[in-house]
Image 1 (cartoon, protein in one colour):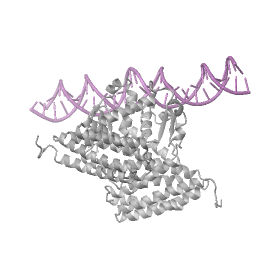
Image 2 (image 1 turned 90 degrees about the vertical axis):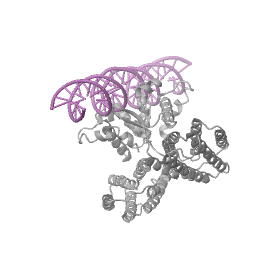
Image 3 (image 1 turned 60 degrees about the horizontal axis):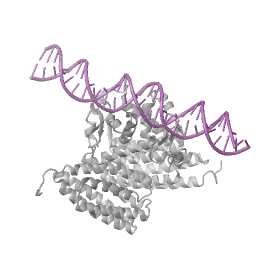
Image 4 (image 1 turned 60 degrees about the vertical axis):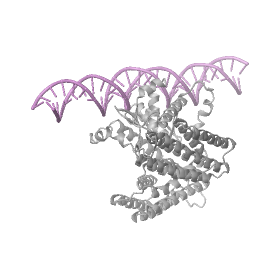
Length: 251
Length: 251
DNA sequence: TCAGGCGGCGTTGTGCACAACATCATATCA
DNA sequence: TGATATGATGTTGTGCACAACGCCGCCTGA
């Protein structure tokens, strides 16, 4: 979409500068991606306050372009600015989280049904690489690497549909939920135990999905994913219900 | 969601000023809603250029708050700013439009399945009012009134689910498609004929849906709506395929 | 006659100073 | 002592001047 506008002047200008100097749009995207990733990886925790001036100093720009990024992140539902008070990372209660998960469950199935793309050799190899990374994680659990693999794997799956709007929406909802999931799990006192279990579960999911991708059955990919997202939320709810009890945990 | 943040300082401040003077956020929303409605009603046509300074003059503010609104509209996919050139209303080709429609078809059914709300007396009356407005339109077709009724009826339907994220996404996709639909139809030389037919079709849809709402069968509402959205796109595609031929049209 | 460069013009992007606003500590009075 | 007003302080929102950028007409040379 938007081909007509893109042809107005971007196609020739994007490749002019090799990689070193960046235009306004490139800088904007860079800051936006950085901040969104920080929010998603809990470097900025929910309810944490961000100061425009600090960000401006860090990225070596004035407040103005920072504010542009913050406005977009606010439109995506990740931030909330309050005049005279501050800009805060949003939080979602269990009820709101359930709504987002319900939607993600349905959307997961759509990826296999709406404009699925037959994965080429490169993409297939990327899936196998993800599976390999997953197997490493099972042996040596690491929260941060797990989060990154989770994000990367999500993007791989998202690339299985050519429906652009579906991709955008799935990505948005994913970024909304994964950080809350991570936050809830990381505050458990059984954290390392739960993490290990979650990684093993994730490993099973990746195995199943990669197997389905190998034979080109994208519909099954959707069904597998749907089931895992639903179960993931069910476990999350169970975790937060029994939060802090630490029942039958040795250490 | 975001209860914790809302309690930081908004709840008390919103009701302090009765209605006459407006804070920053209120002004922002007003300008945003105005521009979005203009885009949706084709007051700003696709590919049309908007000048920040003109908008600033019209709304009696500087370019700064205008730019905030434009950034948000760009994030929603309705605008596209190009440095040194201008800000343009986006256009969607038939392929992109099909993707959005495919998604809307699926989402329509979800409204009846995810957190449906039993409509109260007030809401029910609103549905009956919409049906009445529709019956007036069948007699006296009017493009603008039809667009408004279409938007209002969409919001009524969207209110039938309590799933906030689903509402947001449906609304976003609706605003993306309805203006392209209107643009395509209005450029036909059989315009008035097609409009009349579309209004009659819409009248049948509203009748069916209101009947389903009356007996509280929201699942059926979703199914009816799904069918009508799909057929609407099929007709749209047929229109643009036979655009300008004017076959078997008397006048 | 035409190809290529170059400079004016209009638009969006940026930096900076100040206004508007919310919060909190302090003072002041009953 | 307590409650209320009030100013200090820090934050986001706004206005304005200028920079960066793209487009287009003109000019120059072959």
